[in-house]
Amino acid sequence: MRHTYHSEQWLPYSIDLVFAFFANPENLPRLMPPWQKARIEEAVFTAPPTPVGSAPSSRIEGVIAGAGSRITLSFKPLPYAPMRIPWEAEITEFVWNDHFCDDQLRGPFAYWHHCHSLRSETRTNTSGTLLRDEVKYELPLGKLGDLANHLFVTGQLHSTFAYRHKRTDELLSRQAPRS
Image 1: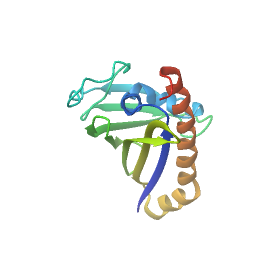
Image 2 (image 1 turned 135 degrees about the vertical axis):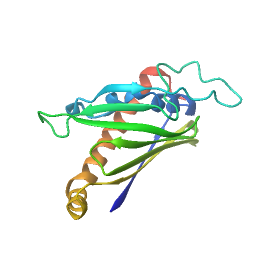
Image 3 (image 1 turned 45 degrees about the vertical axis):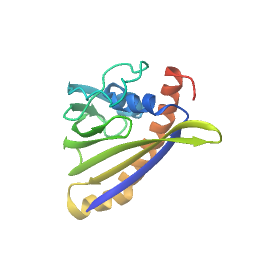
Image 4 (image 1 turned 135 degrees about the horizontal axis):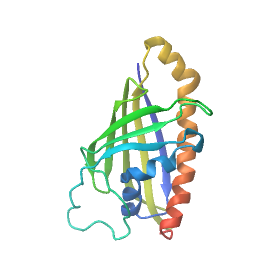
C-alpha cells in the first residue's frame, strides 16, 4: 500500500537561497542523521535551465542538479549496522524557485516519490520561505511492509525530517543573513 508523509518548515531566508541549497545534492549527506554516515557514491548532473527573467542568485554555491540528474547515495540503515544501503534517485521535475521532485530508481523502498515545493511567505514581518516536502512511498513485502511502516518507518521519517529541519536552519544560517 502507498503511504504519504508531509513535512513543512518555514525558514527566514530568501526563496532563491533555500531552493539552491536543496537543489544542490552535495547538501543531502549533511542533512541526514550522522549515524547514517551518508555519502554520495556517484552522480551525473544535468544542469537546469536558467531561471526565466533572472540569473540564479550570486549566493548559489556548488552544483545544482536539474531534471534528469541521477545521484547514488549510500547510508547505514541502523546505528552501528555493518552494511550500507545504496539509494539511486533521479530528479524528474525541476522548476526554479518553485519545486523539484525525485524518484527512487533503486533502493530500500518499492516506490518513492519526493517533492520539495517552496513559496515566499512573510511571518511576523519577516520575509522567508515555506518549504513543503511530500513523500509518497511504498515498502516491499506487502502486509509485512505495511506493518513495518506502522511500527517503524513513519517514526523514522518523522525523526529524520525533524533532524533535517534543524540542520537546514543551521547550515543556511552560515551561508546568509536572515531575511
